[in-house]
Every structure is written in structure tokens, then in C-alpha cells.
Amino acid sequence: MKRKQSEQEALVQLQRVKTSYQSFIKSTYEHAAQDCRTCPTRGVCCTDEHFVNVHITRLEAVAIRETLARTPRLDEKGKRAVYERAREAVERYKLTAAGDTFKQTYSCPLYDPSVGCLVHARAKPAPCIQHACYENWEDLPPVSLQARTEHRVEQLNREVYGAAWAWLPLPFWLTLIDPKADTSELEVLSREWGVRQAENNSTNALRRKRKSLPVIKIRA
Image 1: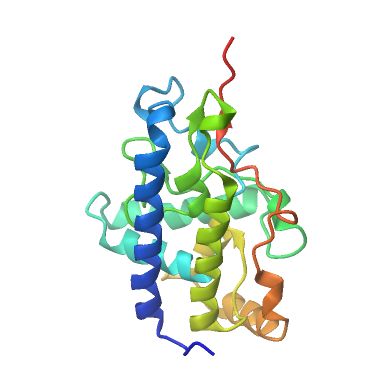
Image 2 (image 1 turned 135 degrees about the vertical axis):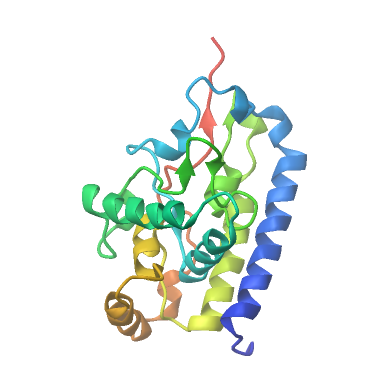
């Protein structure tokens, strides 16, 4: 059985996994995708409240928090605004940790109109790395690449937290790990998760209905 590791050790490994995945997608597939900088509606893929259902894990949420804490792009007020947007998203879109959470959609609080994704280089979720606008189906990255990355993400979470974590909507996780938030809700959820079977978290492409797959632009 693999040894339990510290959160900091796992964060280092998580970044390596994401960096490798991101580099591979960029070099192998993105040349066939539309350049986001030329998009007539910049940010729509991140802010479409009827489309985005990206889920992340506890370790990924911590990685996002650490990235936001270090980014030179935002002052303290700007950093607080991210968590405020997350909390507003949870309330507005009624995001919860119960039921079929993949049916819950929202506008991503990590998108900033002036700079784009605030965690693009260091903590971008796997579905967002995979996502792009392609004209042809055959140019899309296979879903198995995302599934393989998420499986490794799951492994890292288990090595740090055991079964005390879950795939949840990104804004919901940000409210749980907000450095200024009450930790009681996370503690309650952790106890609930801790008594269930860890295998309930395993990646299952047939069971997860993602709306965060690459957008298709059909040629006229």
C-alpha cells in the first residue's frame, strides 16, 4: 500500500501532473484549435452559467488557494474578490455537495476579464486544460487523456486525505478552503466522506456527465 504523504508533497506532484498534461495537450492538439485570443466573446467558455460544470478535488482546491495567495496579478482586495465571487456563485446557482453535482452549472469565479484564468499556469483543472474550440471532431484530444489525469489526481487525494474528499463544483470547494472562512462545514463533510467507501470517488466516464468537454465549431 502506498504510504500516506503530506499535503505539500502531494501539491508538488499535482503540479507536475498538470504541467505535463498541459504541455502535451498544447503541443499535440491545440494547434488545431481556435486561438482564445481571437475569440469574439472572450471568456464565454469560463463564464457560461449554463455550460460550465467543472469539478475539482480537495487537493486541487488547496492548489488554487496557494496559487491565488502567490499571484502578483492581484492585490489583497482582488484575491478576496475571487472568494466572494465563489460564494456568490454557490448561492446564485444553488451549488451543493449533495445529489448529482455534475448537473450543477455556474460561471467560474477564477475568470478575470483583464487577464483570463487566474490559475492557468499552475493550478488549472483538467477539464479546462482539455477544453478548446475545434472545427473537426477528429482533432479533439481523446477523453481518456483527461480521465487518466483525473485518476492520478484521485490517487494523490487518497494519499493525503484518505476518503475525506470529493469531486465538487469548483466554487463550492473555494468556499470550503477560503482562508478566512469558518472550517466547520469542511469538517462536517470530511467526517461524512471519511465513513464512505473510497471507491465512490473513482473516475467513471460512463457515470460522470461532463459539460466541460471541448466546444465544437461546425464548418458551414
